[in-house]
Figure (cartoon, rainbow, N blue to C red):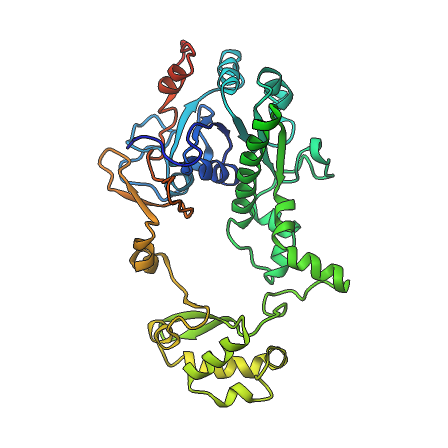
Length: 400
């Protein structure tokens, strides 16, 4: 599936040298907004291609078999709207191709460990020496020495490690929230990249920028940082113990759970009315947020007694949009939700062969004029070698 590129970033060319999740997610945001994102992959491809589940007509890029797809669902989710070029950056002729691509690009993004691109002769100084307007962005576990050399600069990092270092695991009472330390740094890298491109239009010069996964997790917890600065004490471990509002929690229903959040004083009155517990509006144990925080167990018991007798739909009907609340959805629920259809949040495409259509999450950024869409199915490894090199006026090497 291919069609004309659309979106507010149409006209920008991004060289995407990222792997796994953090970097590809950030580059994927740019692709969804219309940027021409060219994914550079090694001969065996981004290892994320090999993570299941897979479609029926699939063959791994590590095997000699040929399938209509060579990727699983995780890869597809963050690499749609990109084109794939396969280069072996250890080969001199492939390095020259890479540099020629960068010569005409607006930005490059990579997430190698610090020093890897330099050892290949493809670091920021080399690339910017040929294209002084290029923006060079990277996502690393502990940042890059150019912007502040961490004692952990050469350590590898993954989602769980970054969340642990950055305090999020402590805040979540020992739980790792999947992918937060990948998705948030990737998002920040995309924001930094377009900001630097905007600045380059005035200055005429590109620049280097990096996002540390550790730093991103620290920034993710701005409130906890400020609270520690104010009090000199870490928040108690566990979200419920660190609460500043109550109720702001999950409650049991007959068929699952619902979240209920009382953010304003009148929300409490509305919740009590829905529960037919007008007595709790003026009860000394629950009349104010301060009182509810002091009597969390008692307040929780009263709310649970109400929610546990009803289904999620019945609870939502009684609340009727009067205060922040929501049913805890699984993906089956989400695919059926009228909101998702109304907002166009599922894009369908056919990856080819004997595979069925697949649905991928659409861009949540909705514009009045600059429409975003799925215009390129997730690419097979090296699918666009000839197409991209031809566009850039680069001769094909013998091994392409």
